[in-house]
Length: 125
Image (cartoon, rainbow, N blue to C red):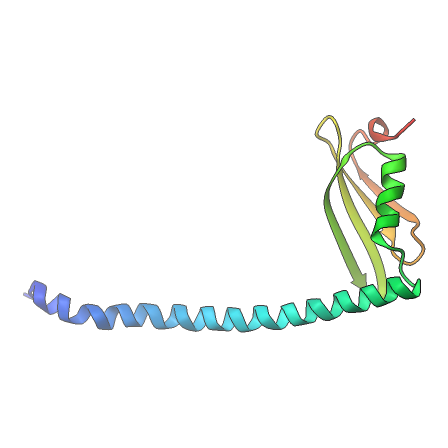
């Protein structure tokens, strides 16, 4: 029957077997995260250039329009790019805790879609 000292001697090896895979996964994750951060920086730089050139409507203009037309608190903003087309997706939280999502064309600033409940209660009169 193995003694306690037998297990104690094997303990460093057992720990190493468990730690090495975790370290490998953490390293791979860190490298992937650093690469995606560099890509995200490039996307933001491109977006800022497009806004400066007037190809994309500034987010501030979209938020000003929402504030003038709807009552609510902005709880989320997403900027998506698909096939070179920019869209703003903005979620507002209404007074009755309803969440309404607005989608805007990033190039024209036009409202494309509204989804949610009790939207009319959030419209400014």
